Amino acid sequence: MFLARHLGYYNKEQIRLLDFPSATEVIRAYRNRAIDAASVTLDEALLLAETMPGQRIVLVCDFSNGADAIVARPPLRSMAELKGRRIAVESGALGAFVLSRALAIAGMATADVTMVSVPVNEHRRAYRTGSVDAVVTFDPTRAQLLADGARQVFASSEIPGEIVDVIVTHADVLESNRPALEAFVAGWFHALDFLHRQGVSPDAAGESFKLLELPDRAANLRLLSPSTEGLTGSIQKMSALMRERGLLLRPGRPELGVDDRVVRAARP
Image (cartoon, rainbow, N blue to C red):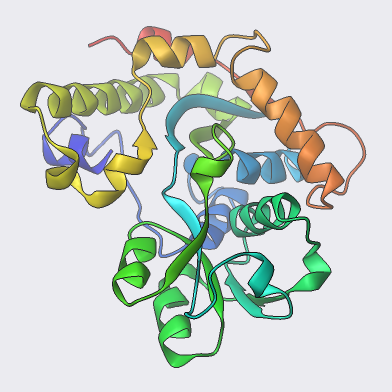
């Protein structure tokens, strides 16, 4: 989206991109209606929908295939070795979800570790000062910590398709301000096409690009169809998993839907 703005695909009178230092602040701004749409992970979208009915996903941005990870201080080399250790986790849903999945795969429980709430912009400092033994983080911080000598003990590549970045908006905004949403999504696909045309290599575009899958327009149309084979199925599975892990507390499935109308209208 920032490449689209840089290339002039966005009319600044119609679309304003706001950058926040953490996912927690993005969610706070969205809850307060300071922003009309937000880039969040699927689990964060479910948390929003639990207390704010009428949420709609209008674009699937990417799937994380290793960009989200847990890194630990040597000589720690595995999740099992984190038992009884302090782990930095951002207070939002994503860090808790990644940690809960990693612990479950390792046959551990949340009670086996001590979670320390640390905003993502403080992850590297927390590691360097020794206040935590491990960090649940994502690129570029993941790559920076590995360069500092940390060891990766879990990555989202072990849970393919579960960490998804989406654009979510309120149902009323979708109806009242659809032209702006269509322009935003059209710019996104223009920028994606630009990267493909230029043949930008993962090295040139950034290390984390190697660990992300960015669905094109055709893939988005498949994902945003009402079929349970698309994102709807992932929402159902994620909702059940989050409820099982105590990340969703209210009864009933959160009102989070998918809507392909914006992608359909946002043609090059």
